[in-house]
Length: 257
Ligand SMILES: NC(=O)c1ccc[n+]([C@@H]2O[C@H](COP(=O)([O-])OP(=O)(O)OC[C@H]3O[C@@H](n4cnc5c(N)ncnc54)[C@H](O)[C@@H]3O)[C@@H](O)[C@H]2O)c1
Image 1: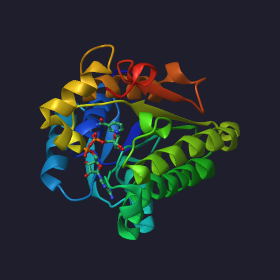
Image 2: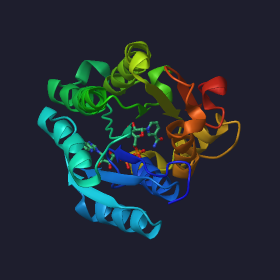
Image 3: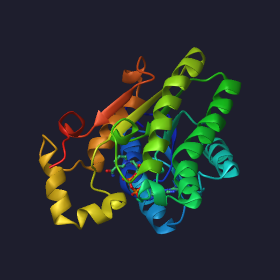
Image 4: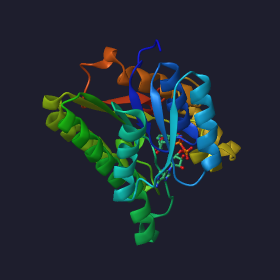
């Protein structure tokens, strides 16, 4: 199949909805076969699978909770067993829990850090081990957030997880470069997806946010997946260890009203 990702296989975590779904479909349109990971919503994963297949690519649906070490290994094993290789990993699965810092529970801390950071860490490890053994190059793309850098009061666990992801990417760029694996973060600003349900339903908060976005609108999943496709392609061969912001200018203009 023609396209910038022809012949490649990608794992996209949390691809039953939102940004992950959009990346899985975009990769298929660019020629890649895709492992569609979901945690709880098989119907969302089936929808992604159908759209991947109508783009002319193969999709393998795998139920895997990335916060569980064994499930991260399962995702990589399934890619190799069912699709014969695995060149691209997109660590997209993520959760957020809002609370004043003094009210954060151990359970919420574990949930957010285990999905957003531990999951990305050990999935990358399983992905890299197979490539290292096969002496093949690869691409890791983490869906981080502007909050790997920018404060988000009352979301301290989310900020800690994305800040950790920022530093993990810089560290792994150095460690993995010599074996031909690049790693980059995409830092979305405010994108219209299910994770922002409460914001999207609160007109006042939404309008205040829009005033902080120079381009005057929320981002779309396609805005993010276009960059994810570029970073996975040969055109991005010399890019590693960086964060690439997709936020309509939010980070350079943000101020409280
Ligand atoms: N939407 C935004 O404004 C925005 C901004 C910055 C960063 N992000 C990041 O983008 C990523 C995707 O979020 P989204 O906006 O598409 O929202 P979303 O809620 O649609 O997507 C998150 C996905 O992660 C999956 N997931 C959660 N826990 C999981 C687990 N343990 N194992 C496997 N999958 C799991 C969910 O099922 C869901 O499909 C997240 O990492 C989020 O932090 C989103």
